[in-house]
Length: 390
Image 1 (cartoon, rainbow, N blue to C red):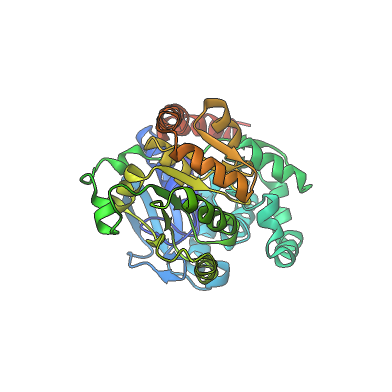
Image 2: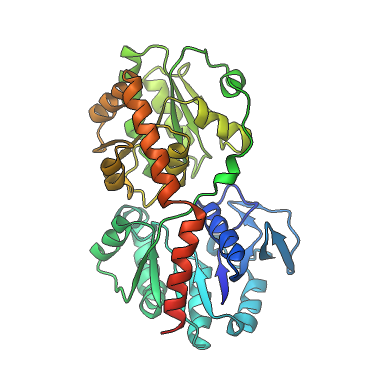
């Protein structure tokens, strides 16, 4: 089985979209299981350019990756990738595209159809109702002129949760076949264990202060407009609590968050860490008391899975694709996107160590049994074979 995975950005990219890490975790495991995987990508990382060898095969932890120079950033288009795709796509059994609204899905779909190759599109939440509502005019035009054709001819659309699929169907888009497989996380990423107190020491947090962790892009869809006011109320009951905002600024939204923090006079209680990686990220999970992500919409947050892997109780909204399973296994608290409910949920966990411990244990079991890269890869191999052998 020979799979071509096309994605606009790939490791070592850090600033680009969330699907990079789970895509690589999947590809690594597929290779271990004997599947030949080749990745076509660009040298783009957000608005930055990666320092990587171009136009030749690079081994990235066992995965064959080709990086092509970016030509047009707004569409994340690479002329070199375009030419190689037109020449080589016929040599693969199946094309898997992790992208939507960009050149990858359009070019991949065009050449897959031309050479009669099955293809899968993984939108990773981009076709849910809330993301579509934002910048809706541009997206509606692009959908009507280009993307709708790609979605109509696709062999299958991949959804990471049932909620993502249901949101997609609610938009009225055509669905020939759905594949529902969650993102994978790579447990080996966290093998290195920093010393106890590493995170508190680095960011000058007192040993007795409770740490509330938000780890995601600083973007309007992530619900910081609910989290900041809720945290202001938490401080009244837990004055030693600290809120960690760990993630890259997107679209300049950090400035809005800073203004909101200043309005509630929380400047000395909120710490911006920017994107955390390596020991810093591991330590943040290990030393925090609760993980919070009050999103407007969330297909499947890798950071939430990682928090559960570290036995952290979580608080998410009903807008998350994980909401139902988190309630079922008792891994955290699921709320409406509401300041009062969020305040109460945070205080409930901070004030009940035994409850927090039990939630953390339940979350860890869930992640280990349902979201390991090995289990996810097995599901993908089964689906790839079904589609190829139709």
